Length: 180
Image (cartoon, rainbow, N blue to C red; front, side, top):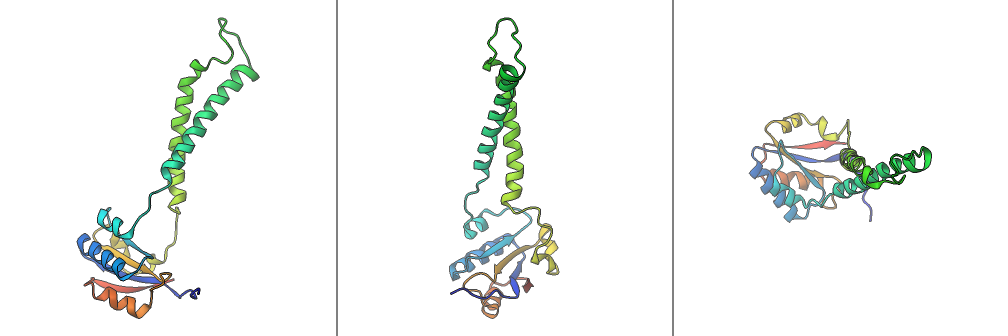
């Protein structure tokens, strides 16, 4: 049975230390919450494990970008040298693939680098000029010295009152409802 979408994005708790955030994330996971996210000024491996991050697809995107870049560089040189404007220099064959290696390598690196940047942006959903958490007073401190855990309203176990009580038991600095 599909739940009606709530008017709130979720419930947000602020913690003072990364250890408190990690403990809260593990506690929420053990209670059965799965649709949650954590925000901190630096990466915390224990929180990533508690959130059960999956592997990313960026390496596959980079590999495909590198292969396409290398093929594109090689085929461009082949087309120019053997098909469009063939010039016989010193009796070499028109398809002198040995001479094409440097440009092919550089195009491989260029394709991989560009696909890494744009693939990472696309897979992260960036740029994201608006997020409901931006409306919470004090959330901007996440870039400096605060640690936040949000349990989203799309979680099957989410109930505003019970989730607020659960987060309050974890000794946060504050618990706030995040409007959608």
